[in-house]
Amino acid sequence: MAVRDVYPTWLSNLQTMVVKMSSEAIATVVKMMESLPEPAQNQMVEHFRSYLMEVQDELRWDELFNKTQSKLVAMARLAKEQIAEGKARPLDYNKL
Image (cartoon, rainbow, N blue to C red; front, side):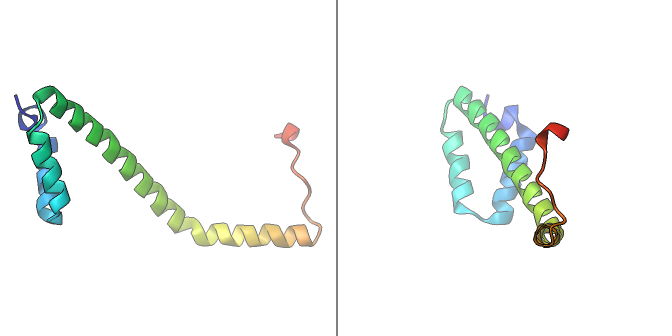
């Protein structure tokens, strides 16, 4: 049984990505996977799935940080102003 039999949807999505991106690197990875024995193919699929999920998660975080960057900068400026004006006091971790 090949990767395409075990994970037909995942492989179809990967092939769609290869077509859309026209990336020789991705096509090479698919060819390399097809040359592996079935257990190794399955292991690679799980590894890629996990890795892709991590990449997607990082991209979501990057997007969220980019959306709030101006607010974070404004808050940092306000904090610096309040410190300079003596309006801030040290944080007491015991009161958190």
